[in-house]
Image (cartoon, rainbow, N blue to C red; front, side, top):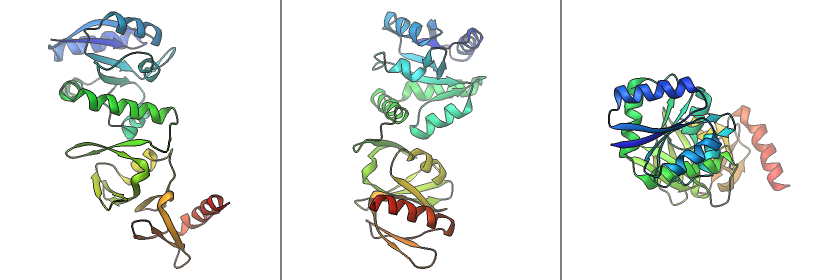
Length: 251
């Protein structure tokens, strides 16, 4: 049996989720509920045997991530819930976190519970820490990013990523040691993911780490040479923006 806690600022949402859990996830017992960050801290602390947390992203006195910064979630599997798709999408862009979009669908609930409960605790903790780092603007020199592939989640230092190339609904990430990684994200997804860092979209098919830009060639509409030796085209509409960026770097 899995003991769970629900934290949501809407009583109706808590009741609805508890009912769905009772109907479709009989292996879970809801042992406590809370409606705010302050209540959540108290409830989590008083239920040390709970191993699953359903956490609303937006609460009346802060966010679910504010709560996580104030509790020990080492032994908790977490499924985020939200009524706002933009919050959910932002979360899964930054780190592959489990989430449910309200109103909660029974099949999605079952899938999220199965994924969360079978996932490795350390991996989930790292994903949450990466997300909170992004939310707090933690674009540090040693920042790491989570990249999801068909075989799992890979953690990499941002500074080691040279460029990303479009591959349909996927993208190939190129590293400074010549390794490549095919990830289940579009280049637009990666552009958002790397937005806190020194990355620039120079073409519909190319996103580059400006720190790895070796040379700009003023031919055709423009080309760049990267530290891995790749020569990439610059889209005409991106040329002025890139030159302005390089001027700021040189200045």
